[in-house]
Structure formats: C-alpha cells, structure tokens
Length: 276
Image 1 (cartoon, rainbow, N blue to C red):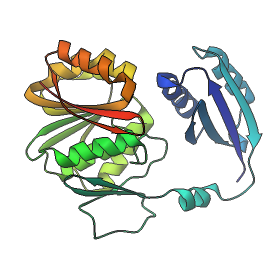
Image 2: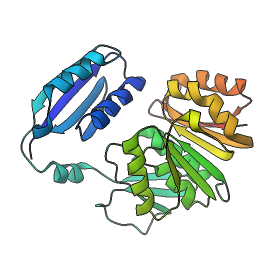
Image 3: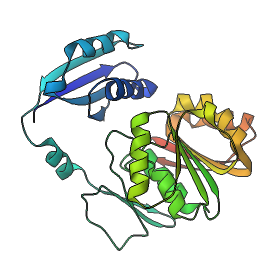
C-alpha cells in the first residue's frame, strides 16, 4: 500500500500542533503522525491524498504553515511500524510499569502491565511527560480514590489508576478519535472506566485526584475548573509543559488555593504534584 508523507513546519508548535493533528485526523483521512522539532509529519494513503484539502487546511490555519508532500516507498507500513515501535518500561518509586502494544510480548517480571493500541492518541509512555505522570500515579495512594484524567488520550494514566485500586476513574478528551481509542484500551486491559467526550466546561462532581497531561496554555486556562472539582486535601497532577513554564503554573495554582508538593523533571519537561 502506498502512502504520502506530508511534512509540516510552523513557527510555534505548542497547542497548534494538536490543532493540526485534530484537523487532519478527524476532518481528513490522515492515519498517523510523528512530532518533529518544528512541526509534524503526517501520513495518508496515496489513494486518499487530496491536495485541495491540504491547501485549504494550510490557508485556514491560525499561523503560517508550510508543508511538503512526497510519496513513500511501497511497503507494508503496518509491519514496519510494529517492527520499530518499542514497548516502554517505566521505573517508579513503587515498582515498574510496562506499557506495550498488543503485538509486544507479555511480561511477568513487572508490577503493572498496560496494553495500549496507540493509533493517533497521545500516551504510550515514550514521551517524558507521560512517563513522569505514570510515576506519580504509581507512587501516590490510589486505593478507594475518585480520579479524573483530563485529556486522557489513550487512557494509559486512567488505566493505571484503576489498576492501583481507584474506586472510580473518569477520563475526558475533546478528541473523538482519542475517546474511541481510550474505550478500546480500557476493554483490552479489563478495567472499568467512565469515558466521555468533552472539555473542562463539562466537569462536575468531586475528585480526590485530578490528572491533566495536556499543554501549558490549556492547563492555565482550565486550572480553575480542575480546582473546582478537586476535594479539599486532594491532589492535582500536571504535565505537558517545559521546566521553564513551572513558575507560571505554580503561581496559578497558588491563586486557586493549591501548593506545590513535589515536581519531576526529565529532558527539559516537567510534572507537578499540587495539593489543595
């Protein structure tokens, strides 16, 4: 099967890269994506490739978007992807978390094994932010807790929270593809999650732990809503931003009555544990 690779470059990635993925994947026929330093690589079957759609997407984008399309070598790209997609082993203060795709071998020498069919959704434990958040979910007390995972993506964090004894876990994502993927992953791991399409404006109820691995701008915009559903004494876990952005997020949390309990840093990325 022949594929077209489209390489996008933009002046500011941030939330804009997520917007582009959403447009290409939900409004267009693009199947997979790879983040680059200054943009994105997107892949579409040659038979589904539409230059007019691509041009219209670039023209409607909120900032200048350059792109270049080329035909890929004709080969079995699913087999190629499986060959190069490695499982992830995250070592935490409370044991090991093994995140694998269905085609990876089962392991018995780990504390938690999570099966994730990644598709287009964010959350396979390869990115430092996901790995750090898995560490927090593995290390914090989850038994009997009510947990909210905002922007749940593959639901890998929600699945681990449930495996660790959380009584109720709700995952919310604005992206329909991620929502469907999260449902598949919950079923594959045999865990009971409440999964919803929506954003922070749809939140209700109260939670002992709120998890949000998104990006700096969305976290700052929605943190007040996270705080509103977080019970007194509850924990807010944040990641998806660079270490240089810690100050802005901690300041916002302080305004909302939350204080920093701990932080993690890996390869310039940051994760925060905040207490209400």
